[in-house]
Image 1 (cartoon, one colour):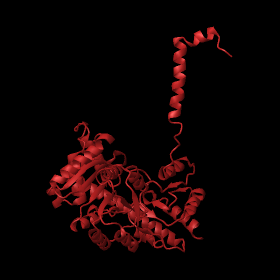
Image 2 (tube, helix red, strand yellow; image 1 turned 135 degrees about the vertical axis):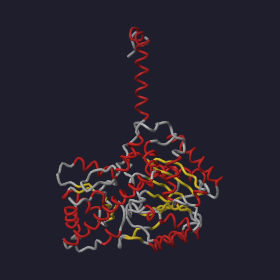
Image 3 (spheres, rainbow, N blue to C red; image 1 turned 60 degrees about the horizontal axis):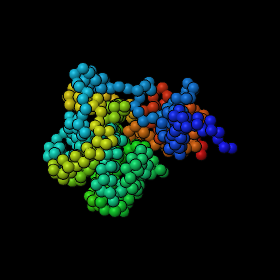
Length: 430
């Protein structure tokens, strides 16, 4: 039907035109993002959500990778509290340089490479403050893509799930190498060495410096020496993710042994450091990325490029966590306190490993649980199947990731017997 003259006149008014334009704009905007589907839930965060929603008084969360005390409570280290008191009111909160806190970087390099490392003295290490270990890995992945665009990265099977996300989003092709041996629940050293030998010369490899996540399985010192030798033969580049220095054994020097072996053997290396676990600075996002270069001039060039990559991502890193780290590591008294406290955290984890294993053995479990105490660090790769983990959750209100990874930080003297009994119940028959 033809529009009347009156209706046509009304439609031509400024008010009507604005309404029409608004309706068109609304439809256009609605369509811009209409195709976006919800992202898959993070498996670890999903475990925590389910745990929090469970009203059971017996519930236990051994899924989250954050330290808890023997009461199951989050911990703020006393050295961190004291550093915070010293910082409060005495330090400004101005922007840091693109590369971050010089003092924090200096202390981080000494921690990773050694107090008297010749490469630090010769200024051969390009280093920047990073957004914890994740940010350090991402900066390196972007650097790798930008300056070695035809390279790829070899990542262990299994690994921390976010490693795959990081190099994927940096558009670096990935391959995997053998690491874990499911039958022994230990290291598949023969398979690992074969994959190192068979990779093309000059390949990039991601290595966990200590306390491998999620397995808790680390090479022995002698095995690290063989790995380093084979890397030398094949001219591979080792990139170490060191998220647990000090937290694994209680001794930061011991936990850096793999890196020191590679340095002794003359490798150039990359290293991502995090202070989330070993200082409990989970939410501060304090970390460091370092790359050992040929000489000082090359280190200056590499650092400048790392800063250029960081600039459009976050401009410059946060200051508060950097101040805490540099205050602790730069003060002999506070550093001594930190070393005592980080050993205390590691010792509690080691003690809970022993308690869990002993409780399972007392229950007459037909399985061997030696791997619980053979493994090290935050996590125990239990060997339980996804179906067994589902039973733990459904029948006993125990929450963990479906790959059977137990966060030992969630195990306490108050729940270890209950946890052991539940594990026994779901594993005693196949």
